[in-house]
Image 1 (cartoon, rainbow, N blue to C red):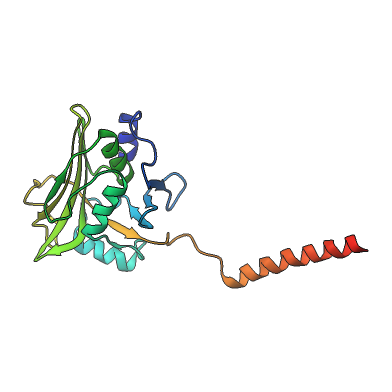
Image 2 (cartoon, one colour):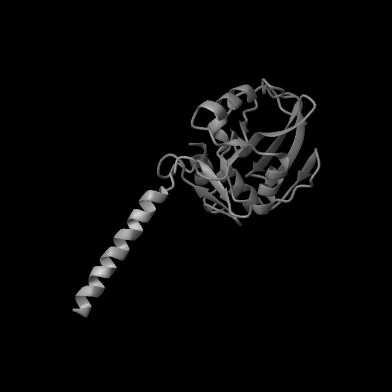
Length: 214
């Protein structure tokens, strides 16, 4: 629903995809819960799908639920996603970058806004990269009214309980940057059925060829 709010607010600025990153359905038609980065080959789960869950809760879901097959994205992969969406961030532990409003609008629209306050939209996510007991958190910020934008990678005292402190207050809502390479709920056809289909095609073609030669 937050994607819908953002897309309605930024209709003129937010097509479904930008650069190599585009929206993909996962569970149902038009759910737009995944974003596919054609440069990296990774599918990114909408941040709102794991909004305000602890790291421990997410790790449990990665092993036992519909999130099986996903994993935490590294900070390098997050930086790569931003770059492929047209937002350049320096590759260090604390980095800030600003960019065009349309680029931020598109990526926030794709990843889902975890926090909306008036004209301000934020997509905040925990990454799988740690330093000591802390997780690196990445944030996209867009103020529609002032066109102020910011992308940041910050060391936050989140820990396993993932209660945001440091640069965020206690009310900050965030998700988790999770990725997968295949879409796990789209089964590939087995080789048996594949060969069966091929044999049917060749069988029909052979019958047609025989009837024409007769």
